[in-house]
Length: 160
Image (cartoon, rainbow, N blue to C red; front, side, top):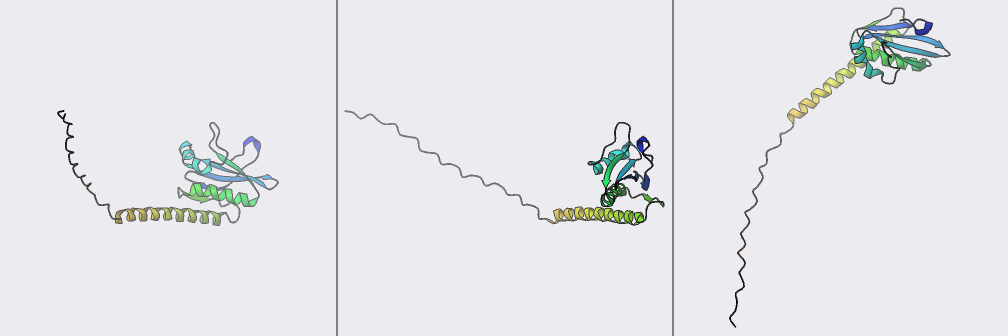
């Protein structure tokens, strides 16, 4: 994962079937986190997860974000790993910093738990819909027929 404008290499943390995640130290306690999709189709799949990140320019396949401090770095890495974990094919770089393997395992477990909870909620909603009593058809009552009013009597001329 090469940096742009001769800014240095990124340390690749995770590689997945949709792309890879890396970061580099910018100095002054800030880091740039980058996600590089494997192709345009993967970019389309990943894009909703990175709406607040810098978007790829024309011909570029990458999302990036500057993280200020190690807490922001951990948050950005978690977000990137979670997006890639949806494909369930992640490999941790053996040269990644200490704790990366544990972070990836934790994020994968969270993603899997969320997917399982969503599936269970969907099944429960479907079961509830099937078990709910079906509304009975109510036939509308016919309004009683209106009685015809007797025809008004024409006034008769009285003979004078």
